[in-house]
Length: 282
Ligand SMILES: Nc1ncnc2c1ncn2[C@@H]1O[C@H](COP(=O)(O)OP(=O)(O)OP(=O)(O)O)[C@@H](O)[C@H]1O
Ligand SMILES: CC(C)(CO)[C@@H](O)C(=O)[O-]
Ligand code: BAL
Image (cartoon, rainbow, N blue to C red; front, top):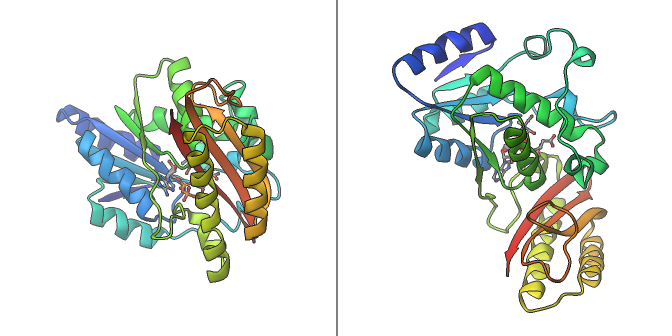
């Protein structure tokens, strides 16, 4: 695997790959890689000849006071994991390479409406930052295919809409959530938690599954289900962010007649804010 830091070197290498007839799969990350990220690379390998992973802790998607500075940076361990799974290129640009005119002067990409919901409401500007960096990575790598995890369900929705709205010739694939043996979705931010908090955090997935089960059994009192779920999470030691039974089509709150649902949740435990979701198809 070749690690590349500049756009010029990336473009030279990828031009050669394209000239050989290879198509390109992109796996964007913020690093501190775990088995969830490696599954994305594996899926990319099944669908593209050459895999480019990127590591960039994108300042534009962090709000003031968030964990930008303490976000774990573990480049050497990440390189070893990507090498082992057979990734071909790792692109690790500096902030200057990505935002040469500075963050404040960067043209921004804004996906309307959905960017203001849920994670976007808790983290103002977050999805503008995500859409902008992903759009830039698409321009830098010019992949045929890009893969994102279903753990960040709203992010995947935003990226699909951006790709469609901007007519970008890139196939977007989602990849299933990878969990630990107790059902907790793997996340870099799990590393902020103590053993005790990690164990309590399994309530997030349990609560989502219980809510999904109740809906599958015919319960349509979504307001009551959401409030019961929030109380369960609080009893386990979480503090509320959001818990919503949404429609898959536009992520707005579902009504009892909707049949394709996504239960989306974010909650705080200790120093971490965790995300998870459960899809329900009635
Ligand atoms: N458990 C997981 N299963 C599947 N995909 C995942 C998982 N965790 C992260 N991903 C995906 O990996 C990509 C990179 O995510 P990122 O580097 O932010 O990792 P993360 O573990 O989600 O970190 P964070 O804790 O900061 O949210 C995203 O597409 C994300 O959805
Ligand atoms: C897609 C992404 C790499 C953009 O910075 C990030 O939001 C993430 O890691 O999910
Ligand atoms: N996995 C989403 C990246 C973020 O939390 O900013």
